Image 1 (cartoon, one colour):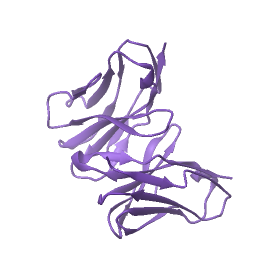
Image 2 (tube, helix red, strand yellow):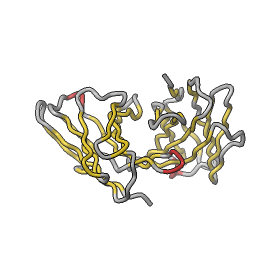
Image 3 (cartoon, one colour):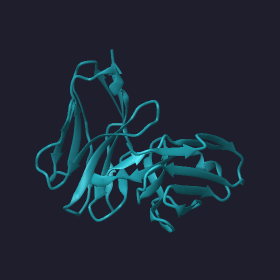
Image 4 (cartoon, helix red, strand yellow):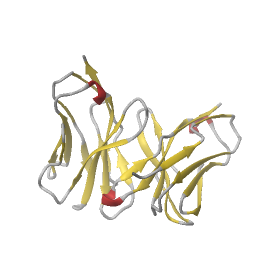
Length: 111
Length: 114
């Protein structure tokens, strides 16, 4: 089974502060994704990566940046958090058969 | 742009009965993949079933099966012999064969009545 962890699992922060969420995989999967989940919107893609230092924007990328300096880690950064970024954030890895396997999620609250 | 629509925000079914969740999608492509994901209260996203567009045969996984109507761009999920553990949010999802991204519907919350 693919191993994927997210840290932190819960975070409360204040508007204007920087926040970094980490996604870590234990296997050498090339593709990694960051989604946010909000009521009434399902999951929406923020950014994704198709290799070390190779990233691209998703549907809702404004206000977010990502970095991937190692295959196993994919970081999502909110440079200056806003209340509209309160959400549950999911990381996923791309598997064979065009499937994605999801991490456990991070609940972020921006006050 | 491709879109995925789940028209039923919530549904309920009696335990042991059968329920069908609807999903339609919009695409101009002929080669793609469709998925149903389950999200129980634990929040973990779990792949339930997948369907390749080039396959005419509907996918089946134990009590879960799909009705894939390519011409109608419809991809419904049937759950037979519903169990309490099936209570969850269900997401329909689409992926083009030419792309690395999955597009999700907004979800259907399924309640199982004992």
